[in-house]
Image 1 (spheres, rainbow, N blue to C red):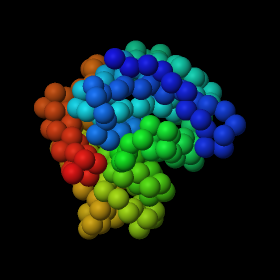
Image 2: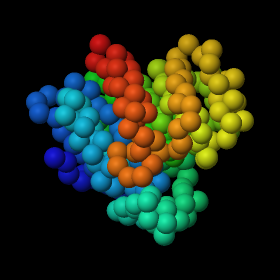
Image 3: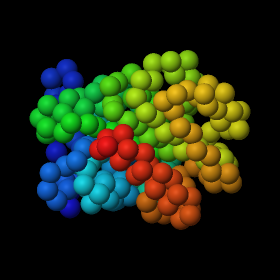
Length: 233
C-alpha cells in the first residue's frame, strides 16, 4: 500500500527517508508514526497502512537514518535486539525533533493537510512527549515511552492534546519513573494517561512475541478515538 519517500531536512541541506501510506481519496488529516528502536520494519509499516485505511495520510520516518539508514530489525531475534540497543545509544533526540518539525512542514505546506498528529512507540513514545512540548503538532500519542520522567520539567510547554499509554510492568520504565510521570502530568489539562497493569514494554507491537492482544486493542481504540476527536472533529 505504501512507498518510501524522501523528506527535506529542516535545514534544507539534504533529505531523509520515510514510509508513506495514502488513504483512498482525500486525507482527513495526517499522522506521523515514530517507530521503536527497530526501524521502519513490517510492524511499523502495517501501522501506517492501518492509519491509511482509516482515512489518514500516514508517514513513518527512519529515526536512525543518520547512522543506520534503512535498517529493519526484529525484536524477537536477540542479535538484532542488541543491534537496536546500539543504535539507540547513537540516537540524538534533538535531531529527531527537527525531523518531526520538517515532517509537519512537509505535511501541511506540501501535502495540504490541515492537521497533523503523531503516534510513537518506545523511543518513539518519548518523541511523542517531546513533540508535544517543543513543536506545534496538533495531537500526540505515546506508547510506553522511555525517559519521559527525565523531562517532566518541560510539561508546562504542552499546548495541544497528549495521550500516554503506560505499561504497568514495563521493564524499561520503572515504577518510580511511572510515579514521576503521574505526579507531573495527572493534573495537566492537556494530558490523558492510561495505565495497563501487568503489561510489559511493547505490548502494542503489531506483530511478534511482545504483543498482548487485549491490551493492544484497548490502547489502539483509545488512540483512534483520541486522534479522531482532535484531528478531524
